[in-house]
Amino acid sequence: MSVGASINARGLTKSYGSGEGAFHALGPIDLDIKPGEFVSLIGPSGCGKSTTMLLVSGLEPPSAGSIAIDGRPLTKPITEIGIVFQDHLLLEFRTAMKNVLLQQEIRGLDRAESRQRAEHLFARLGLVGAEDRYPWQLSGGMRQRVSIARALVHDPSMLLMDEPFGALDAISRTQIRHDLEMLWLETRKTVLFITHSIDEAIGLSDRVFVMSRSPGRIVDEIKIDLPRPRPAHLGEYPDFAAYTKRIYSVFEKLGVYKFD
Amino acid sequence: MSDQIAPVTSPPTPAARLIRAGWLWSILNSVLSVVIFLALWEGLIRLFDVPVWLVPKPSDFLGRFLVDYPEILRNALATSVTLAAGFGLGVVIAVPLALLMVSIGALERGLYPVIVFLNIMPKTVIGPILIIWFGVSPLVSVLVVFLMCFFPVLVDSMHGFRAVDPRLDYITRSMGATPWQAFRYVRLPASMSHIFAGMRIGIVKAVEGVIIAEFIGSSAGLGFMIMRASSFMNMELLFCGLVAVAIVALIFNALLATSERIMMPWVRPR
Image (tube, rainbow over all chains, first blue to last red; front, side, top):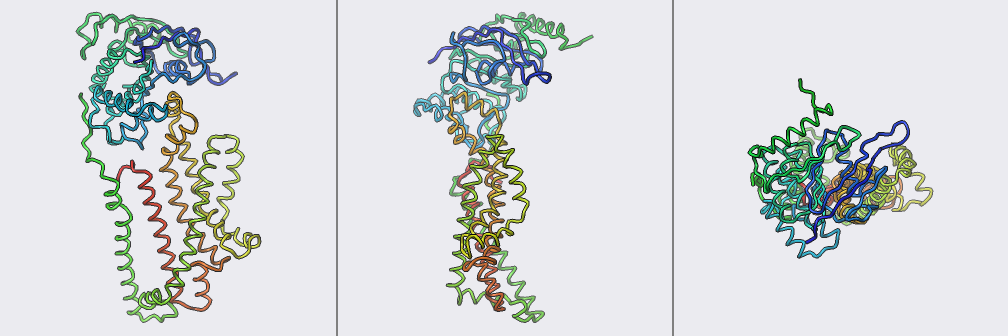
């Protein structure tokens, strides 16, 4: 099983367009993520969180700055990753299992082995019985679980998630958060988790990076020192309240929130 | 786990779906409507005593199917071959061209205005030009059919290729997919429903085109047979031709609908 990768970014900047109409979306930011670490980026809408994810995956080139994955400079899209977006982005013409095995088909992996891994993930994600269903036959939460299985079936060293639970109801969200944590504890991939939700960031992460409004910069870094696995109701930890308060106060200082 | 698998009936086997919603059912349905329609026709003509040379009764011309079936069948076959060739050519050229135009911006900017112009122009006016170039031959009809179905297939395919979520491209690239794999595994199947929508319009246009082309520049086919029957005031054969055209159109539509169901088994039954 592959271990988590390290991510080191220096002076990462992204602008779209050029000249007068250029839009400065992100940075410069520095990121240092250790192998097997679970890191969240939290910030207001449009702050460049998703852009950060695309840069780290190599799917979009940075306008300035550099990224190294496991010490190797990133120049093209890396394939040792799994990506989950806010929308499940499953292929409507493939069943749940075939959506996951797309990884195997495109990468040319061993079929039996991938199938076994997929079945294990289905079991861990509560998807047993959903294998032969098409996406339209599944609930929103189930689709997102299939999407997570697809991102993990090839045993990547890194998992990038862009508001993966953003479209789910609060109850499914709490459950899927726990299931993801358990899966991560088992495999210890490096996870970059992008979210709007303070609860989610604290509930899952080893470290939380708080970002400012556009152009996004990292304005605070919080180490979350809570035991794992974390409970559904995080409020029972006094530290949770302190972490939450700290993030809110950063947002208030930045003018994201205005409370009188 | 809090969320359960949505309670839906298990998907039926492809064979069961073919029978339930497929060609068998649609043919049965249409046969019944046609029989009722013919009975009404027969009754009205008898009631008002309309002469055969004006409007023949179904009983007048349906008998001709038995007598003249070698001629009708031969012409229907000629029309079908022309239709299949022209339609096949249209699809085989339109779909890859649509992909090229969507992928290469310059090609779209250059070609699209020309295509819009050609699409708006009635295709049958090209018939006389084609006759000068190729003489009275099946090739003329094939080319007219091609032109008739080419544009709807092209336009809908372009629409389909463009409608694919660009973030799927991120996902396939993160899998290390080659451009061919991204097309084969994602883009083509994701666009399939649009391509079929274009083909469904295309086949209707193609049937229209083949008959007109056979009217003006052919020595075989149902259009040619109808034109000749008309010049001899052979009302019975003329109406036989009409019915035969409808049957050919029906068969092509059913073939298309069936291949759609086979090629897209994932589509939610309606």
